[in-house]
View 1 (cartoon, one colour):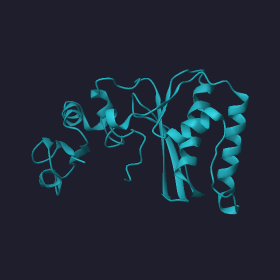
View 2 (view 1 turned 180 degrees about the vertical axis):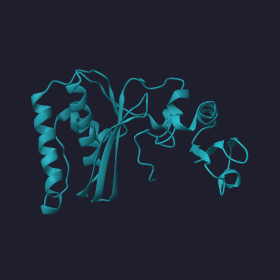
View 3 (view 1 turned 120 degrees about the vertical axis):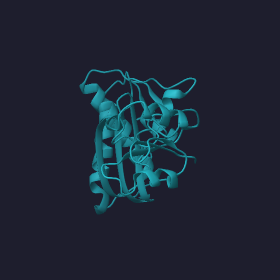
Length: 204
């Protein structure tokens, strides 16, 4: 995947199309400010603003802004990451509009990515319910969205002492789904049209 590097503070500023070009501007430069993007449009838009507005956001967090039919900006995006299957798993949710982290859980031992995706969606729904908000939730996992709609985490993961906490969270999530009507749309993030899910952990 192509990357575009914005340098706000360096020997030269601007958008660069290779890490070598970017590195020449920032390596050894005191207080350098730079960041990579996955589209030129996102990079050029970011260059017009300040580095502080991008700090802490995922690499591809701006790509969706330039889609012909973008997602609903006022929404929550969620994702999970797992090292191995099963392995160490964590999940998080962001405010799509601001890039602000709303929650982050884990890492948990002996989990799977699908379990993390399921728990992330439910965590987002719980948070929005407390705020009496009907904002949509986006996930890039069809499997997890299906589990949420059926109100069951249909995992083949084997429960044992190493992932006891994880299964407690699954049970709590299923109970919560059983007890609540969900006014929030749970939608599929269209990676092809919008770029990487902004809640992605950038470990691919």
